[in-house]
Amino acid sequence: YKMLVDEGMIDELGNPTQRAIDEGLIEVAGNDPIERFKAENPLVAHIPDEHFKVQGNQVLMDCYAVRVAATTILNDPTAPQEQKENAQSLLDEVNSLDHNEWH
Image (cartoon, rainbow, N blue to C red; front, side):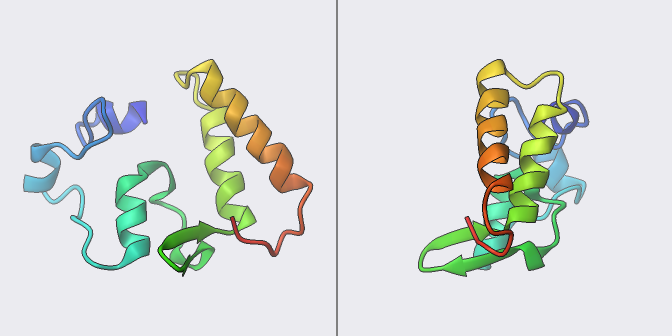
């Protein structure tokens, strides 16, 4: 998150900056639910689409994607303690599940 703010891609609220849009640093999501989900959640934007699926109106992530997102938060020295605790809890839960499940 901090890296994206420092690079001027998003503001402190997580929204893309006008500069990022004008310079083509980000893409505005279209109608693809996975593309839109990744645009709204930059933490998972780099994870390949194969780790996401749409079920009903929800975008689900497989265990790999959840693990990557949680680990990224845990390794971020600027992440708030509450966010790190939630990430650790989620990581513990995912590690105890069947790794073929979607969340």
